[in-house]
Length: 332
Image: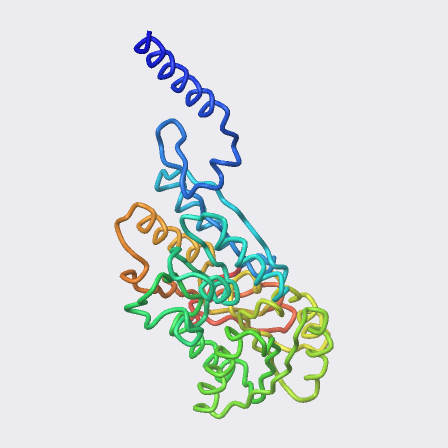
């Protein structure tokens, strides 16, 4: 009789466990660091992006494509701060506590916010201008901790842009509109000023804190500058049409920091496709998720394939003659 009860108890326990397993809802799987789908591991990637604009969107698309091409199954948790620093911090906290296997940070503020909260979850960034100055990594070659990624500054881009402004456009006083509160932007402007000083060009700054201030800040430069140089500042690029309107009205040639801004009305840019740096960041994420590498061992990457791209409508409006030696192409 005792043995019969013992056997019945074992059967009952097994049945309860089986029912419990069958009754597990999707939310439980979401909370785990990884799940199983048809015996294939599903990774959870948290995504934080500082603001909505074409360059950052393209970088995210490239990142996703690299993951897809690698054959990984991934569940994304995408969050956009809409250029709100408070929301950016909240998003970082949510993602760090979400059980993510990896966090993809699309911009300097996004990367800084998550990096400040975890030393354990791997973080891969892109659209960051100076990863060392932003204190995200120890060095480009040896990142150190749990953070690595791709930067949006190609070493030759700024010197080439400045040479074009001076030698081809005859610039002397160059206006720069940017958000001084973005470490990413302050670093870029300082680099531009240093290079311009070497060739005798003067920078006239106009600082903003929100996209609503961009047009007025640009207008404040009229009469003080003969050209504009708009870097990859998230606040300004998100309201680039305001700058384009002022530049067109006053016939000011405007060099920009990336191709999407050329398509939106900028005269030209020495740059690269943000899709590509997003893709390269995705390839790094694949190595980390597969356990092939750690962030500390993956060197931060510069963009590849620097090109000079012009906006044909803007070229025509300014009456600029395109020279063969520029080796340029028109934005599509």
